[in-house]
Structures are given as C-alpha cells and as structure tokens.
Length: 137
Image (cartoon, rainbow, N blue to C red; front, top):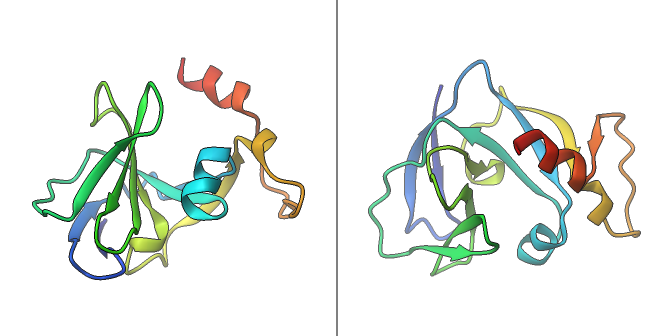
C-alpha cells in the first residue's frame, strides 16, 4: 500500500510503501521516544528506507544501534531506523502519514520506561525492553 506523508511544515514530502500484510504498528514508551515526542512514539515498519532528497531531512544517532530522522525546519519526527543496515528495519511515524485508515495499533513496547502519569488500558500486549531486545537479537 502506498502512503503519502509529510512533515508539519511540508518541506519534506514523500511516499512510502507499507506491506498490506504488515499494517500493524506499535506504541513505544521508551524514555528516548518520550524525550523526542513528548509521549509514546507510534510507528509502522517499512520494507526499506524511502529515498528522500531534501535539505531539511536530518538523521540523529540516538543510540549505538539506531538513528532518528526528523525535519530540521519544523522538528517533525519522521523515522526510526537501524544504523548498520538502514533497510533492515525502518519505521515511519504514523502521524506523518496522510491516510492511516488501514493501520492498527497492536502492541506497546518498552513499557518498563513508561512514566507513571498515564496508564495503558487498551488490553493490547505490553512488552518490556528485555522482551523487545530478545525478539531482535
């Protein structure tokens, strides 16, 4: 499925392909996502990092293994991806997609980093950092 997307200011506009069989997404509650977004980060996995030609796109090495892509103009969070193989796992922020009709929140990850001021009460699976890391190791 093809999805148009853009940052808040519109200086970065792009299209992503989301596998119709993989339209599920997670809400990440880790402390890094909270600092970047002010709350959980919701993103859907892409089959590859999209080719974007824009002076406004910047990548930040947020850990030893991952990068976060954002707009230098408006600060919109756009992507999260692995550093070593950028096409192995790239995630696009659900909020930048123009059409989210077919996407479904299916789980919460890094819930042990969740702050105390909100509860996760939707009954979806909740994975700790250890559980998430074990899945991808």
